[in-house]
Image (cartoon, rainbow, N blue to C red; front, side, top):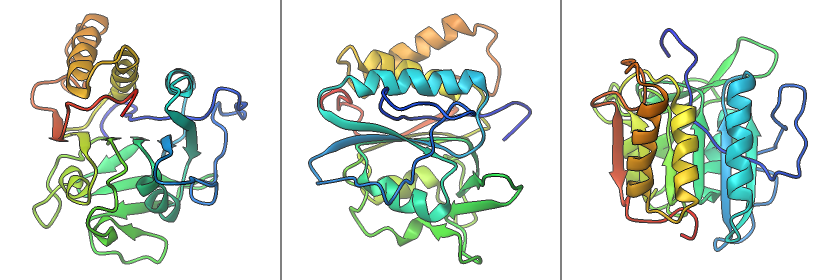
Length: 242
């Protein structure tokens, strides 16, 4: 992940209370995600959060929770690989905030140093899951999948997480070719500008401009660093009323 805490993000209804770490627990797959027409956002917290990331998550939840087209804005707190694998196909917006490396999501687990993986690599542990196992079109409910660091870096087989998630049906995937720092802030700005009814492309451009104003030092690990962001798919869609 690099020298700083890295990020990527999404949410729970504002009526839900925080636990002591600021994020409510959520059984990602077992909690009902109703019919295909239901619009849902899930913010997957895949590494323990500090106060600033918790505040970002809260803001994203608040905004999307007020979008009438959405029936829920949930948090999946430290999901297992099975839970993340099963949850992604059920969302309209999926945000994954945590650690990653070329070809895989690294998923911290509660009260242990043990990690699970959702991966493009050959699966060698029963707890892990393969991204390749999704069927063609299985992720088509996702209007946006906001990925985390190194998602745009080729895995051992020459492809990337972003490309495979797009090929499996996600309509738009935004990820990063490098290690990334403050991607949570950029993701929050994307949602804030989307709240104004902008398309993904227009909201992303506005988020980038605002991010550079807020963080003018131009760190090479920022999401706005030259060549860092990777976009796949249709950015002409609107998140607020997809």
